[in-house]
Length: 192
Image (cartoon, rainbow, N blue to C red; front, side, top):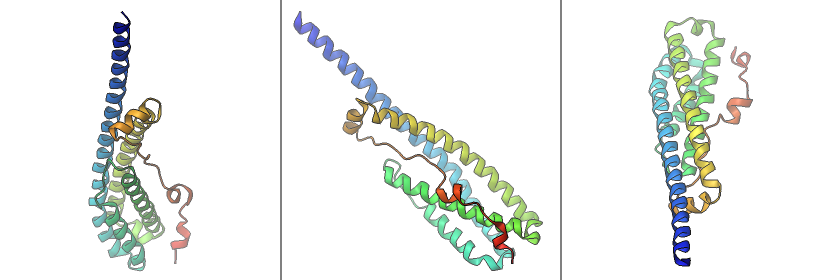
């Protein structure tokens, strides 16, 4: 009788542990899927940037430094990274944030330049860019939701033990960098 009780308790513990383990793996996969979705939209933005830079270069000869910086940031943002490595994901997301901030500065310069602001190609490019940014924001919300579920399951006991066994780690949130959120762009500084 005692043997059956011990076996029953062991079976229940095993079932609970397996269920928790399966949920951790499910949450990790969902977070990686969401990150893949973010990457699809980021790739659209990356593909759009050379066209925007080409158009801007035609009209913005005095902003070569900013255009070169954006090209440099695009190269860093498109560099491969490992989705299962939280530090690699964090660096990737930080590069994307820096690129977003630089593009904000570029469009602020365009807005402050009446000749550039009235050019149809740059207006269309900016509208397309803003549409892609909207898709990125939606994908970022989905990713952050999936990361919240993963991080909760990994950090709450017994998930912390099971995650260690499975090699699953918490992932970083995709948040706007401080430079994007806290540093408003002053278009007046670009008027010359």
